[in-house]
Structure formats: structure tokens, C-alpha cells
Length: 285
Length: 285
Image (cartoon, rainbow over all chains, first blue to last red; front, top):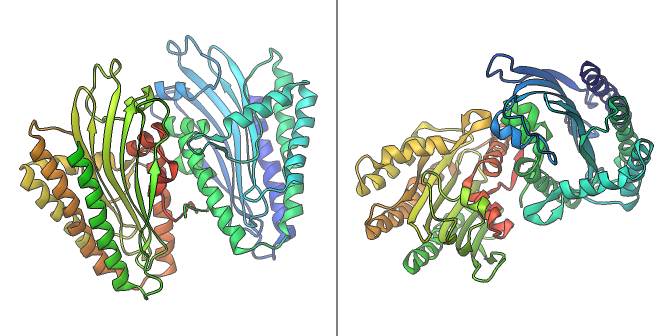
């Protein structure tokens, strides 16, 4: 558990450093956004409840209009509602008798200044309950205006990473992402997908953990080249309008459907940290 | 049922006419927003399922940045999830055996151009199930920047209307509004409250219906004088920022907690009509 938790905080540092490099490369020295780190805490309801994390936020940068890279480690007793939003595919019998849990993870969302640069989400986490422990996570690309070659590149890098873990694994993760990142009430995908997995426990913890680590790094390789490719392209007011409306649907998904958001709010984590994923500006025209 | 449904569509016309008057009084002839009416339909899943309504939308006006005044009449079979979001305080035993329903209502949300003019919501509706029929509704004021005299005026007019129905009724409706329009994860009210009621069935349908009608008209008297008082006041960028962030929390409430929104999405109504309540622009800075 300690090893996983340390990794998520280490990955946060790696990612923030890379994002700051990108900002510096594209901004005037004054307007480059640096990440601002804040310690977050989870409301401690009962004895043995608690945890917290570090929320790193980029605000009004030249490249990153708003980005949040959150790490947290939380533990306690799962309430009934949170039990329902905990696991997506496995029943956890016996959790009613001993509803202790521990979880750590990293969660990241980037909303970009240039409407031609796709927004992105990435998240990996480890859960522990007395019955079972597992990894989960995923990443998905959310272009307001899609470029086919960006989508291809994103999927290709993720496939490479998944293939090194297990052949066939990418196919199932990609299909799961297509099912998960789907805005039900609008009957359309929220973006162009990526990978999603949950309840990952092959019986070989070290191997599963190595995959989760490699996915964190693969994410950077899947997305940053797209940022570099699109950031300097000229965009119009009409692109911006498309972007803001696209973000509106993203907000709908996160608040209505996203399990991580529900889990965070229901277990009493800092709402500003949980809702860091929401865009700086969104429209419903 | 026919009488109630006709009233909601009549009230929609009254309200749209008044809003258009307000627009014309404050706008250049070109920029006055007129309501654009669209027929909406509910997805008909099974035989005997259906309904629809009229969505009236004001867009980018001088006074109304975005306003939606929706009427609908829907009927069919309640799915399990929708049964849960149907009624706020009464158990409806027997609904599993005969889950037919009919509902009609009017629902209105106004997001205003001038950040000193409060946003407002109003909704009244009638529900019928084989077991019970009832009225519900409410209205609440959502200033980004509060003026005490506006809040007082709003509550005073609503109190007058409720008092004519029954003494003590306003107190309970106001308290219900304070409980209902409360953003749980932020531990704060969404606005300054108003009135909320549900499961209204005193045994005298005519009297209950008369109250629902009078509340629709009282809403105009409670809010339009505030619009007139604030619309011509000068506002700053900082007021606008406050307004956009206030709208962000409003979006959170509507998508996470609002029963009407959940009911609409879960019974397959047109998502653009259900989500008409969302603001034209909102921020999460």
C-alpha cells in the first residue's frame, strides 16, 4: 500500500514538471502558469476516518487554461451509498460486515486554452478492502474538434502499453472506455475514448502495479505530442464556442455519471479537490 | 387533468409575453430577445408511453441572457429508477403493481445578463398515479450578489400567496425550500430560498389547483419588480466573475441533486428540454 501511494505522489511530481516545461516553452515569461499545490483533507467523520492529498492546479496559463493533478490517500469506513459507487463490476460480499477501506490514487484533468488542443483525463488508483484489493484507472481524450491523426496516436501509445502487460488487454480496456465514457442522456460518447479498467487483480500484485506505473508514463507520451502539434495552430471564435459547448457536456458526464466524482463527494473529500475536473468556463448555449 | 395541463400552457404564454415586454423595454429594437418556441417530445419506449411539450427559449437578450420556460405533459410506465425520484416524502405502495403515471407542469429558469439581477427558478406540476394524485412546485431566488431588500420582497410576495391558501403554509414551504435548495457537498444554500412543496393533496382538488394557479402569477410579482430595480445598475467584470462562479454551483446542484432533472432524464424526455435550466456560461475558476 505504501509503495503504491508513494508512486502516485511521485507521478504527480513528474507530470507537473512536464506540464510546467510545456507552459514555459509556449508562454511569455510572465504568463507561464506554474502549478500551485494545496494540501487537501478529507472530512473525518468517525475515529479511524481520514486522509488527504495534494491538489496541484494550473490556472490561466498560455497552454493550460485549467489543469488539476490531484493525489490523495484516504481510509475509513464505507457508507452504504459509497459502497455502491466503489466497484464497477465485482460484488463485494462481506463488505457490510467489515466496511473498512483504503484508497490512493492520482487523478488529472486538463482543459486547454487552444480549442484545437484536446482536453484529457487520466486516473489510476489502488483500492483496498478486507475482502479484496485491486487497481483501476484509465485515460480518455476529449477533443472539441477532432483530428483523426491525434486520435490514432493516442490509441496507439496506449495499445503499446497495454500489450506489454497482456495481449488482448488493450481491446478490453478500449471497449470498457467506450462503454464508460458515454453520455447516456445524450446518447453519444463524451470524447474519442481511450482505456478504462477496474478490479484489476491478476494474482500477481507486482506485475499489476508495474502496469499501473507504466500507464502513468504512457499517458504523457500519448498526449503531450498532440499538445505540441496543435498548440501553435490558429483558432477562431467559432472554435472557442464549440469548445465551451463541448465542455458543457463534459460537466454533465462528470456530475451525473462519473463514479470517481460520486465516490469523492459521498466519502466527504474536499469538494474543490473532487470537482477540480470541471472546466474553467463552459457553455450551454 | 385536462384543466391542469391547459393552465400550465396558458401560464407559459402569460410569462413569455411579460418577459418579452421586459426585453423590449430595455433593449434596442434589434437586440430584444423574443422567445423561440420548439415542440419537444418524449422518447416513446413502449406502447402507451409518450408525451411532449413546448420549450420556449430566450437567448442572448439585453435582459435575459438565457431563459427557458418549458411546458410538458407526459405519461407512461414508471421505471424503477424514476419511481425513486418521483415523490419526495410519500411512499407509494402498490406502484410496483400498476406503475402508470401522468404528469404535466411548467418549469422555468432565467439566467440574467446583468450580474446584479438575480437568476430565478419556478416550477409547478401535477402528478397522477393510480394510487394518488398531487401537486408540487416551488420557486427560488439565486442572486450572485445579494441585495437584502430584493430577498425581502421576494419572500413577502410568496408569503402573501401562501397565506391566502392556508395560514402556516408559507412557513413550511419556506423551510422545505431551505432544505431542498441546499448544495449538500458544498454545505451551503444554492441561493436565498423561496418556497417548495410536494405531495399537495388536501382532499379539495379545486382549492389546491387554485393555489397552484395563484403561485404562478405571484411568481411574476415576486421577481419582475426586482428585475426592473437592478437591470439598469452598472456592473463590473468582478461582478460578472462572481456571477459565473455562482452559476457553476447552480449547475452542480441541478445535475447532482435536482429531482426534476433526474426524473426528466430517467423518463427519457428530450435532454435539451430537461437541461434548459443550465446557464449560458458558467465557470469553475
